[in-house]
Image (tube, rainbow, N blue to C red; front, side):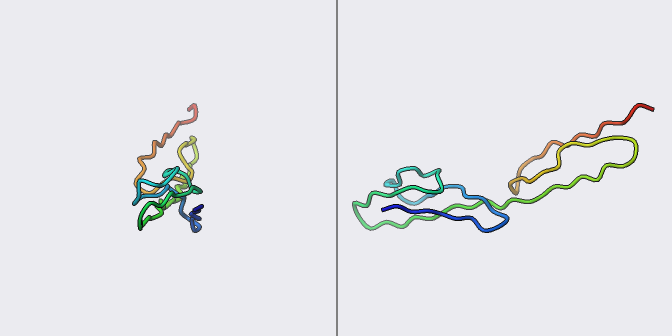
Length: 81
């Protein structure tokens, strides 16, 4: 039986849990072999945007979209002078 999970805006798919019969538990689209009644659950991870406003005199890195709970390295680099 084929199954597919679709994430809402602001989330990403993160696989399936709940049964040993799931063919590809880390894939958004997979199938399941049923040998008895089963309950499965899709997993979704919230994603958020990090914006960094650089001030005059330098540059920054690290802006982007990340999973909630991710540790994000950010760097500031001063211009010469």
